[in-house]
Every structure is written in structure tokens, then in C-alpha cells.
Image (cartoon, rainbow, N blue to C red):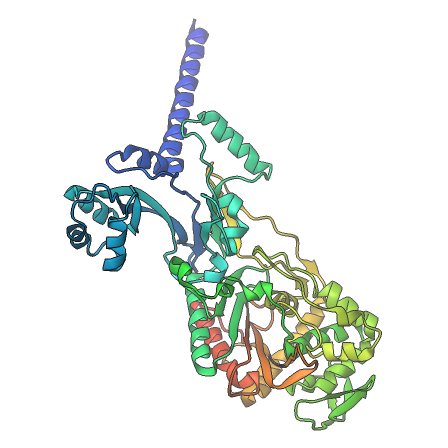
Length: 570
């Protein structure tokens, strides 16, 4: 008897627990997952638009404290239109709508009196207060209808990285650039029945997420909004000072490939992207364009030479200022000879003849192997951005030694900025090739948050090679860069500048007065937490990157040290 009673109690308890779980789960779906859609259905006092209102997942920034900050959201409000067949006084209606309509007087009157039309849209994206106030006026011929649109609280912040939503030529909208396009399948929402079976939606969705099938959700990025804002501020200052055709930068964690900031100037406002006259501003040249980067490739050449055993840190060579290879002349930037000097001076004085010496000592097969297979040059990085292109490295298949010598100092091969940063990060992280990425995790609508899956990082340089080259690049900052004036007290910082000639596409060869400036630095020099890359195309008024890019790099480095409270390492 007692056992039967306990059994019934257990069954009742199980029943009530199950019912509670179902109710809680149903409330979660009603209020959280499907809440906005039900809210729209419940609001019956306004006219519904002819086409379904768009809905879409949220894109989040991640700040230094781990707080998620909305970068792209859906906003609900109102749009207004007029029915010319019911407008009794177009002038009075124009007066009543002041503050809500941005059309000119003549354009509005033309719409309000258009013959044969029953619907003319006059304003969108109005707030709830404005929409309700207009509805209350009951103006003849005025149509107040629900509206929903994509909004970007940061305006132009990370514009090329976030991307935007626009019509695809039909009635539906989709992500057109940046993360909006890359993760469109995750961010878009299907027009499925709101009363779909709860258990099918919940358990089916969870199963799909666990199996890796595409599912609806929000995306959480690695972009740190304060760092992004500072990078964009520095690029804007640079643009106003040196007037380049283009300037850009990347700030990345070299240990895991998380990108904290990525920006270009000029940029645009995501909330007014339709006002742009040049659609090229929407693209991201950091992943979609290639450039000859110049002397920031010398540390990669040095690392390959040391790692392969072709040279050591203490190897010396006789620098004659100029050499001839395969009938082509290669010279130092100032054409001056240095005599017998060690490897350190190749980086400290940025000597082309010295980089050529290391390339020759390695031999073409070894250098090709390091540049293509170890550093991944000429390959896409796998960054989660649309339209990534691979570098142009055909010269590294040439039988001529001169092609390898010029590549050793970053000329004759062209690479994307993100491809370049990934290769240089091997010097900062102990010799590993990582995957740059902008998204950290996806929060699925079924309630599961799942980190993105990334390839395992690959050891491509010996750890001691990374340490040696980092020590050499630290000496560049301590003694050579601005004669040591850019040294940061109590912090080890490794850095290298680059000034590359720009190829002349019409006449062959290179322009004598057009340059690409680049700068890379990472810190702390050993086990680095940040790598900062900057570049500018055709800055005006200064021939060398050490003049133009060292100041913004120094400011960014100081900002990162203070913002992240990086402890001093020396």
C-alpha cells in the first residue's frame, strides 16, 4: 500500500514537472523567440503593409568587459503614405505633416494629387510616437502603416565589416556586404507559421544545431567597439593629414586570430548607405584587394632564412648598396653601401640588398616553400568575410632569382592586408598560422550559444625563430625607429615599416613618385597580445612610412596598453 502511494506521488510529480517545463518552454518561445512577431500581429489599429515586414537576427559587438553591444538590429515604427483619391486639401495635409516628411513641398504635392493612384509613400522609419500622433489626427487621405527596418546604432562604425541589408532585385531583402552577407543564412528569418508545433521547433532546432546544420540565430563578433572607434579616429586623422587614396588598418589577437578592429577610410554611414554615389566604398579592400606591401615583408624573409638554417642572427654580409641579379639592378633605398654588417641591420636600416642576400642564401625552392606553404601567401585566409581574394604570387614560380630577391622586400608579389597580417602574426605568436575571424559565436533562436568552429592553428616556424626575429624587431623600435623616440617605456614592442613603389599598370615598371606605406607592430614582443597593421595608398607629401604611419601606430599602441591594462614586461 505504501509503495503504491509513493509510486503515485512520483508519477504526479513527474507529470507536474513535465507540464511546468512545457509551459516555461512555450512562454520562452512566445515572449522571446516569437515575441516581436506576435507584437506586430496584436497591433491592429494601423494599416498593414502589402508585403510582409522584414525580421532579422542581431549582430553584436563585444566590449573589453565581455558585454554585448548591438551593432545591427531590427527597429519597429511607422511609415506614412497618401491616397490621392481621398486627399481633400493637399496644402493642409502638407502643413499637418511638417516634421514627419522630408520631401520638398512640390514633391509632396505631386504625390498627394497624383491622378489615378491610391497609394503614394511619403515617409518611412518614423518613431512610434510620431506614428501614433498622426493616426490620432485622422487626416483625410493619410495612411499610417506599420514599418520595420534594419538599423545600425553605430552609424559608420565598422561599416565595411558589418555590411547592410538591401533588396535583392525582388520583394525580399538580404545581406549585401560584410557580415550581413557572410552570415545571411543565420541572420535571416523564415516566414514560418507562428503556431508551429512547439516540440518540433524546439527539439528539431536543437538537434540541427548540434549536428551543425544551418539555423537561425544572432551573431556575436570579436569587434571591440572602443578599439574600432579609436582605429577609425586615427585613420580619419591620417586621411586629413596625408590625403591618401585609401588608408586602412587591422588590430588582431595573433594568438587566436580574433580581430578586435578592422577599418578603412573613406567609409560610410550604414543608416544612409543609399546616399553613396560610389558603390566601391561598400567593399572591403582589406580582404578584397591586393597590394605590394614593401619592407614589412623583410621580417618574413629573415624568419624563413633563420628557420631554414640559411642564416643565423649573427651572420654577416658585405652590403655594397646595389647589386645586379639576372640583369636587373637592386638597390638600397638610399643607394648607399654599408660594408660588412650583421643581419640585424637589414631590419634596422631596411636594406633591400640585405634581404636579397638572405633570399639568395635560402635558394628559390626553400623561399617558395616558406612563403607559400608556411606563411600561406597566395592563399585565402578563411576569414569570415565575403569576397576574399588570394594574393598574387606568380613570381615565386619563376626560375629567375631576381623575382625571389624582389619578393624578399615585398615587391613583385601582391597580397591582401589580412593575408599579410596572418603571415606576420607567426612572428608574434611563437610560429603559428592562425585563422583571422570576426565572429566569436552564434546564439541560436532555440536557446543554444555555440562558438564558431575554426581550423586548428598550425606550427609553421620554430618557436625559437619567432623569438629571435621578435628580438630583432624589438631592437628596431628601441634604436632605429625615429632614432628610438617611438620606444615605449617599460614595454617591449616589435615593429617594422614598409614603403613600396606602386606598379604602373599602363607603362610597366613602377611610378617614381607614388608609394604604398605600411606599418606592422606587435606587443608585448614575446607572447604578443596584439598585432597592429596599418597601410595607406599614395599618401601625399612624405616618401617614407616611418614619417606618416609611425604616429598613428604609436597612438594606437598606447591606447591598447591603457584600455586593456596591459602589464609592463620590462
